[in-house]
Image (cartoon, rainbow, N blue to C red; front, side, top):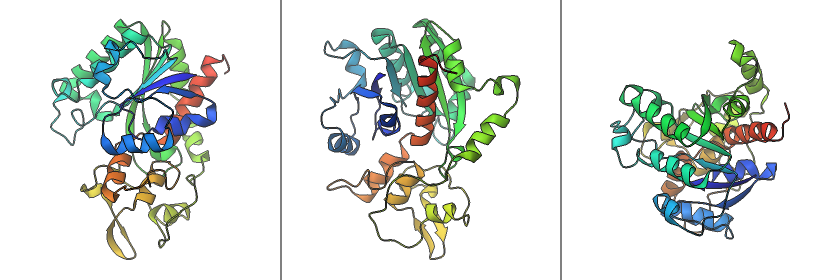
Length: 297
């Protein structure tokens, strides 16, 4: 599977899908620190920059899948909820324009669960309508990261589409049992996942939040967000403190030290991780799509 990534951030998708043998054709990211992370880890993968200019470019390689988590602030219940009238929210429609231009077989679009109620549900209806008009059958589902092996409550909407067929995205996102109203299969899957997160620590710290979770001593963390937000702090035996970048990496499922590049500030690392997708969730979706694409049940 060859994919293109928009609003790439620090590329949770590529970390998730490398074990699947999937290959990125290009990224699209404009923020300074995420671009530095991409250049550090993937120097040979072109970064197309501004996603609003992709449709006008002549040098965009064809892809099998388009992935992107367009900015969520305009749809979040914690924000001003400007919806599609907000410049950031409007990038969801740009995602649809890229679909219409490039026509990949598959797409994955991620956003906050608040998209369902933004503008009384009309914003999400418009987005789905645009995707369907491009020729895609679509399925969507809310997935919470805490059931995929990381100790973080992070509910996100994932929409999966396939060109010309609605059955394939449904098969990718849902187990047959869940379509009968039985959630047992999903619950068993979540409980079966290991709590450990990848990588060896390069930092010498006391017992971290994630370590404590793995030992059964702590609850699940709230959703990571910007560095100055209340959810960026944790209460442990030493008092109230901010999550370390190492903890943030592990809470999002990245290898420890992934964002520890030359000149990286603590705030920049934290912000980039808080804006990212969760690696184990993306791996699960990718694994499901791979099975469906290969005709394996």
